[in-house]
Image (cartoon, rainbow, N blue to C red):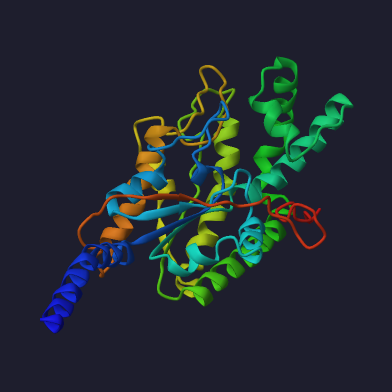
Length: 322
């Protein structure tokens, strides 16, 4: 009798553990998604807020049933991603990721442009302005005089931006850092599917004579950046989400930029994020291995400290080749 009761007790204990075991198995099997990059990944908008459920990361996660970590940082550079890897804050998310998306490169090249605009602005007005933050804030800010002078300065440098002697060295510096990003990803997690988004032209719908210079000046630089990203995809082991073409072919305005009110914020709006998600989903759908049935999405916000180099300076404020 005592032996029977012992067996019965063991059976009840085993049955009691079954739901937990099943839940644990489900949690292990849920696909993991890590989003790396800049303010496109964070969903930043012109007013300083961030899109939440309708940014492309959330949409991709919802569609694929991923638990996701959005590790994007506003104004991030390729060196900023390297700093995130170096401080160990993304070790777990990186090692466990089934899918990794990256939006990077725009800020790396934009910094050169902003240095050029700042120099032209100072030559025109005699006033100094911070290239990294002052130029962007002035162009989209509320001071009409500063904005007009910055646009005039931009008009003098944009036509030759992609042909500037420092463009190619700056692009090469970005590519070297980008290569290191991919090398680290594949070393830590050789099985993850890595998707890199091409850079769109935020001013692709501009047609007015006064604003065409923005569209055309940005276009030349963006095409060179995108070609470099395309050229290294096979060698460095990533897939391409062709966001550039999707934006360029759209009849809808997919960025916050609006020439009718001279709104020059270059971030994607909600419709733009939906299109980016579609571009990424098209790549996922083309992969041979399917993720299976969708499960409830869980968001994990990465606790990422400000990226710094060993000297304590912002790691993404790299030395520009001038």
